Image 1 (cartoon, rainbow, N blue to C red):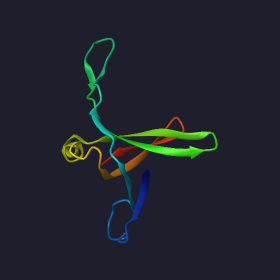
Image 2 (spheres, rainbow, N blue to C red; image 1 turned 90 degrees about the vertical axis):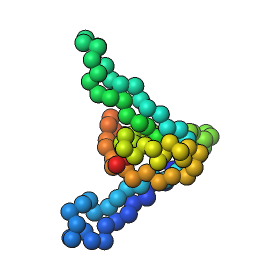
Image 3 (tube, rainbow, N blue to C red; image 1 turned 90 degrees about the horizontal axis):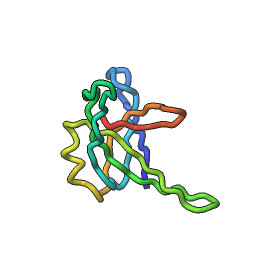
Image 4 (cartoon, helix red, strand yellow; image 1 turned 135 degrees about the vertical axis):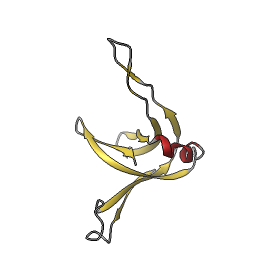
Length: 108
């Protein structure tokens, strides 16, 4: 099970941060480093591969269950804490983005 938890900032007017913090909570299934993105013409690295955490969510429907994979990029400086927790329930602070009409998450 994957949960999206919203924590509202009760000191909104005293703090310039966002009014809420989003946290993905669920069983951490896997952590891996994505491949670097190479420029096809020059062969140079355009962007380094990011560490990624994977969580699975089961969505039950009339025709059966569907397994959805949630991939969340994790900053390099925070990955150490997650690599040791594969198989455990974890909470990952995230921000959201929309790509091709779907919401995605990245760790902060």
